[in-house]
Image (cartoon, rainbow, N blue to C red; front, top):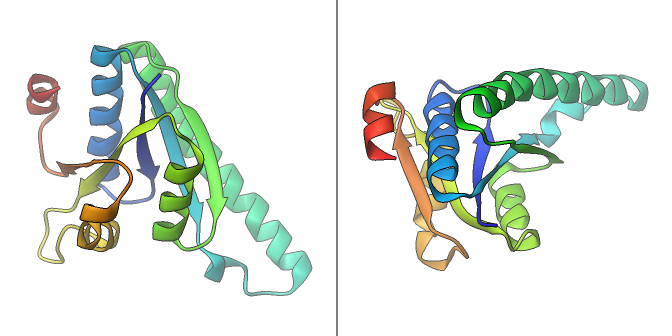
Length: 151
């Protein structure tokens, strides 16, 4: 089954990327894999503190994932899977794509403010020609209705 890989983060545009991935998966018989990346700088502390912070980060990610997963199951009949990795976001995204041959499309949300589309979109589109899968970039300010029409 082809999977849509979508990145879970704290950005506003993440919501539209999640919606798009779930709706496309529902319409095409695919799946959704949600990737959360914990950056290494969060753990530059003593070992005991570092372990506690890592566990707290995982709990926050799991809680955030459950909100999206419930919506996907209830509204789109898609049961997403969660993958949590630690490291630099772009490297971990690329590693996940290489390690999971079922991933067919990377879905990213693009910011719509003056700061640009966001660091992931900027970094990944620079090397888009050599990526192992296509990227779908979803504008962060698209309405739910427009997303439904597109998917």
